[in-house]
Amino acid sequence: MSAPTNWNDLKKDITRRMDSAVEVLKKEFSGLRSGRASVNLLDPVVVEAYGQTMPLSQCGTVGVPEPRMLTVQVWDKGQVKAVEKAIANAGLGLNPQADGQMIRVPIPPLNEERRKELQKVAGKYSEQARISVRNVRRDGMDSLKKMEKDGHISEDEIKKHEKEIQAITDETIRKIDEALGHKEKEIMQV
Image (cartoon, rainbow, N blue to C red):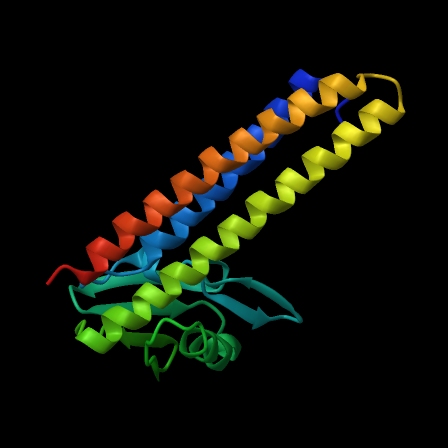
């Protein structure tokens, strides 16, 4: 996409990209469990397969046969070890066990230590979202400077628009913090 040449297009682009960061965060949070097995739990898992990284969903089918168990039916027998390793190394605290082309992933009960681990993971996800938002903010500021250099806006307009970009950024960071607060509360509920 070419760089926006007017403020309205730039503002729409910034807002869309920041909102997208919040949506990605919420999707990642849906994968963090709060006691029950969910197919979304394995969404963040990426597998090294066929010389590239790909989401687990492109290597097999995730199922929930019972509340404390996930299964992954791996489509290619040669990828079972790679999928098993990816789940184990995803930082989710899961211990997958291969059984032919089926991988069973028992969901350990949420003890206090595990809850704190999940809170740390949630914090890491929200920090990644904040970084993403700050990168969008930086891109927006750079675009404003380019628009001024190209003669599309004046120096006074830049000052006004920089404040608007900062306001959008602050609001998006507030949404991220709010989502993190909700997730932490959900994780810590006994």
